Length: 483
Ligand code: NDP
Image (tube, rainbow, N blue to C red; front, side, top):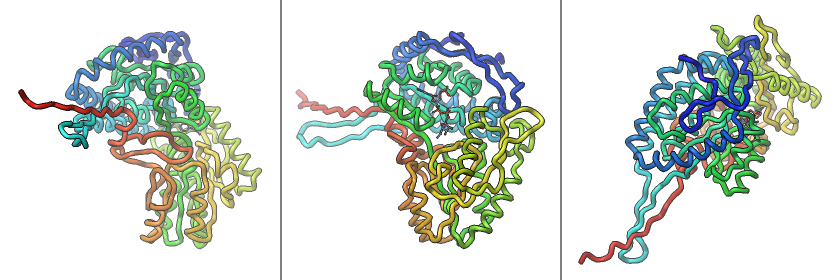
């Protein structure tokens, strides 16, 4: 297959007004390709095409929508090795994770293919005699999707699948760091028998294409995943147009390790969640709050686990942690290491750039101990293979530290105590709580999202996704008496 590098607008692949280089972060000499950047006029064309296509798609009915979503999901799963290799090559996650991500993206489509067939309505008796009421869900219209680079196929999939399932049209702006994955996902969608303009890919920078998209009056709803500062700007743009909005942003996920925990399991889950995906997950375990009775033993094992990870080229067999996604992100990570040290955190391992056979953005898994919750490394999202350990004298103190954050995406506890686990489930202020599990790793059929600065608007995924991708209409019908 010839690899596309363009935009997909109004049912046609197009060149952009300019191009950017896409390079492999495991080996910067590997030029993946030159990828199109959309012009303002091309974005406007995509929005107009989406507006025209949306009613046709809605009118095509549920069997058609089911069939299309099922075909997309099935093809993604069948091609997960091929597309996953591209994800690994351009984003830097190990090959197995790239394949797993694409397979998961397929599952989002097959799940929502089934959801298309679910009866979404309600019936009600009226308080007035002779009147019947029904409540139906209708599409919101044209949905703008703005997605990040860290899950370049799965994140857009969990937005695009429900958007199409519920009868909407889509204009998608992916992250400029991962255009090849975006093109491959688009290729799978574009080959379906769907109205021209129903699905549009407009690659380009956030500052230009992204900003224009979220300010556009032709957008009915915006779904965004990314950083808090960009999210704040998008919220302001959305409010100006009264556009429906859903955002999933930063995090600072805590994991409590109690004195009654299975220590080896706790170390495995903490290190996996902290360093998996090079720490570039919104669900990464970045604050490890450890009971003082087992603190030293836990830290010793954690450092050993961090040092045992094989950091290397994402496409090389045996690699467990790939490179950081970009030079900018690597520099930001190293800045956080310097900030942690200057705040008095104790650097136990890592903290530096690593050399490998190819020139890439490799960084050693990094553990800070002796940290306090008021340090910047415990308050700001780093999106790095860096985790910070804090000591707590009791479960209550650990919970208070965990809840002392502007974020609230995921949170975990490692304990054998039913009462601590139950109390944690009920009192941890987070969108997802995990008991004896890593903070990262969620299912595709249930809601995902957070509280506080981590999320805004209705939840994503599972049947809760209907809240965002549909609008409710209440119909009152007085049938009258038959003649
Ligand atoms: P951003 O929030 O900058 O980018 C996310 C998406 O928004 C990208 O598609 C980006 O485009 C786009 N964008 C950027 N500026 C605008 C704008 N003004 N209007 C509309 N869209 C815009 O995240 P980054 O990818 O740059 O990562 C920076 C930090 O964000 C990370 O270090 C991490 O802390 C956090 N992050 C958190 C994620 C999470 O899941 N919690 C996911 C990704 C990032 P483009 O990339 O093309 O500029």
